[in-house]
Length: 224
Image 1 (spheres, rainbow, N blue to C red):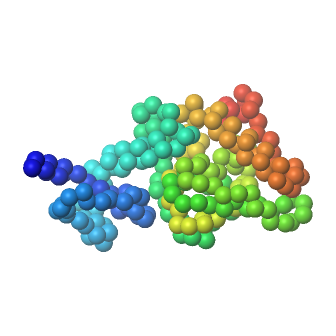
Image 2 (image 1 turned 60 degrees about the vertical axis):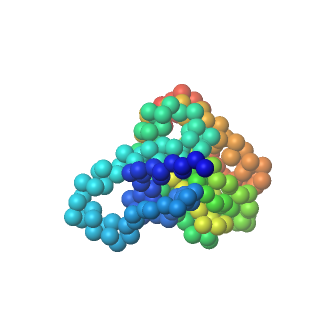
Image 3 (image 1 turned 90 degrees about the horizontal axis):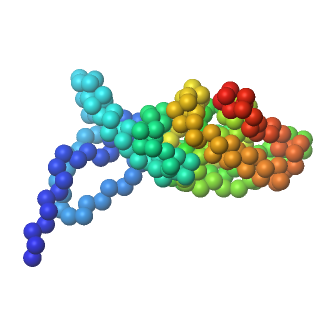
């Protein structure tokens, strides 16, 4: 029988949960008997207090992981690696337990979310009749929060986790720089926003939806 190859040396995994203080972002399975060294969150924090430069050493690996995750999202999959790496630096991993709101209708815009895992239910209260409308379920691989960004308004719907969810989140400050780093995303984002606005209007009516039309003028794009 052939001699099995030794396991890869010096490979690190599990760093995202420690650096971002979130839930695990992937599963790792041993294909053969393996020996690993592990460190708990508590000891990791102690390590970074004694040796703070360690987080700087780990940052390039975190950026690489984030960039690779972006490739799974249609919105970002066509970006050049250099651009994707820059966008990845603007994002951080977050987790939401079942039943928690990822965003709430009418609340201040806090940026974009990219749904890595899980499902979220979309609901909205009618501006005229006060009824709650169920607008559907958003699946993993989706970009959410673009309507508020494009229209310059508060959140336009409530998104609630139907199961434990993980996201890559971009702060409002970083959203302002997004189209400078990756201007090719502008048209994709506008198309997505217009499509979602139209579906909301069809389900609720124009007055109930109360979402401004997405402005595609050159001046609007320059503002973004």
